Length: 418
Image 1 (cartoon, rainbow, N blue to C red):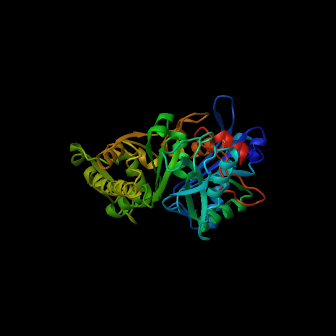
Image 2 (image 1 turned 60 degrees about the vertical axis):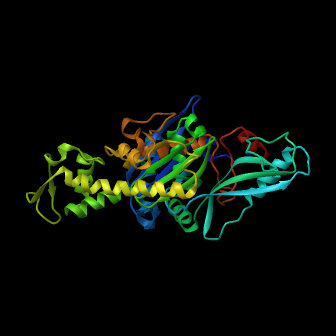
Image 3 (image 1 turned 180 degrees about the vertical axis):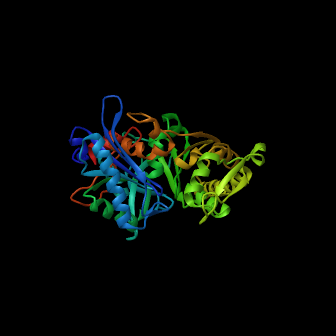
């Protein structure tokens, strides 16, 4: 797979990534260094033309992308021809696909490995779905316990479990269309929870079992990591912008003021002092000197139910998937909406697990304003690209079915043999 390199790497190891969110767009330009990658260009601005992680206005989204990428290019002095991009909406719950071949009692060879993996990658999806990730997460011989590398073992049947993440084909094509209008190609498409996990998790967490919950503006995405691999991904169409809209409707205030009140006074957990603390609430359509004065408890009473609903939806998705037990008792919250005071404590109460806030790691050059949970996905896209987790295009066609890197011991072998 040595011919499957990102163009950016050929130009001195420069990589461009684009995080397309419902409320924020962010472009990082990174350069690979000996120890860790260094971010040399940053561009971010308010998103336009996006709803629940899906592009709804091609023209508005294209203009926002162009402005964001241009800012990062100007700062870095680089020109991008392709970017690694995330997908935070338009994908449904991932699934495991099992394929197997006959060994007839022989030893597992490299040829057997290639054959079972190629069979796994050939699993077809409906025309309206596009495969985003298809990753082998475990091998088994004769139905035994999964192993990472079965070469040299004997048996009658060799099976592989493939973790398959798919998205609506239209959603992926719309992203490609917007980037094409900006004279950019897609180097790889990455599910947001996968990218967030690459940036915010430590090795022991991804090995022992952990759930990443990326709380964005329009969606909350879920990723379960176990044994070093992403084994489940899903999303719920609720995010921080829904909280803002609830505040605007509940207090009859403009959206901009609702967002400001959420940032300055918002909390997911009520406190005894909330009744005494008063907040000035400008009213929709009124002059600035016409405003209501309400207790902070009223604001918290609007925020808390929406966040409770979000975590209950996440809990239900995990229980239905069956991966809530595999994920253990550890949850890492990332995304801009996770920064609201009390969110960590509320998540712990509803999900009954140990919670920590995840921030991007293993990268240099981040400014303080871009080092928080809101930028975990963008940093994860850099890790995905630089660690050869990218699935680049070949001959103009997006390659999403084959891996070019894996967590686990066989990653290097796969890169050389597939």
